[in-house]
Image (cartoon, rainbow over the protein chains, first blue to last red):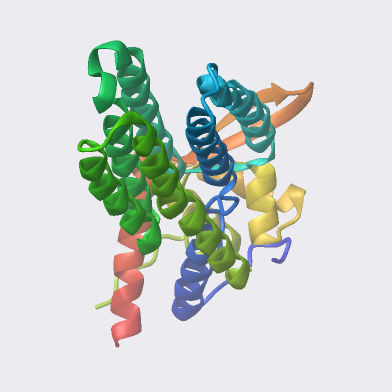
Amino acid sequence: MEATEKQISESEGFEIIQKMINTVKSEIDNSSFYNLLWGWLVFIASLGEYILIRVDYAWHYITWILMPVGAVVTVIYSAKRKREKKARTYLDDLMKYVLIAFLVCLCIVLFFQGKLQLNTYPMVMMVYGIWLFISGGTIQFKPLMIGGIVNWILAIVAFFLPFDQQLLILALAVLLGYIIPSYQFRKKMERHV
Amino acid sequence: MFKELDPLLHSQLRLAVVSLLVSVKEAEFSFLREKTGATAGNLSVQLNKLSDAGYISIAKSFRDNYPLTTCKVTDKGVKAFETYVEDIKSYLKK
């Protein structure tokens, strides 16, 4: 743009508004990093625990050690992203609040797993479903919304299953709810660049 | 009878800045410069004009010992932008 105060026509004014609003659309976070990171971690942990149970390994829950690792990576990555991000959109804020609500619910469910017992993983999938459905709807990406619905359906199925099979269902839920939609989203964003 | 367009917004760079700020919650100076393609000097002048009119608010802080300027559109700015869009629509309909 010119360094001076350039006079514009009415139609040029309209074009500027359109152009600037379209520019902001490209600011949507297209990394899918968090979904893929957590998707793969939960997938490996749940499938790993299932395998360890099958081979009668006493410390079968050891696979969940991956969760603190994921938390550390998330904190480092999000600090880096925050520095790089030069604008904060309304969508960023909405996604942040949805994520906070999801994490609070997830912590409550995991904290009370002693009381919930066999209902823990179905509850986790229900909470995942809410997050995926709202996130998908907000960024208008249907596969993520479908992923949310799949999580709800699998949660219902898991209520009727024993613990070891629930682990398989959880692995399937993250595969269909997070991992596949996240790769689809990444592909979609790459096409738009 | 056409309304007179807000002279503060009916300028290439100021309109671009307000359009961007209406779309995002807040933006850094470097973001506005990158998206508008304006020079730092010109952008700075136009931001001050918008700020003096109460259309935007400018916050100055530091990050890693470097000055950081963050801009936000005000309610008055949003209202002026909406009025501008309505006025411009009536021109384009003619």
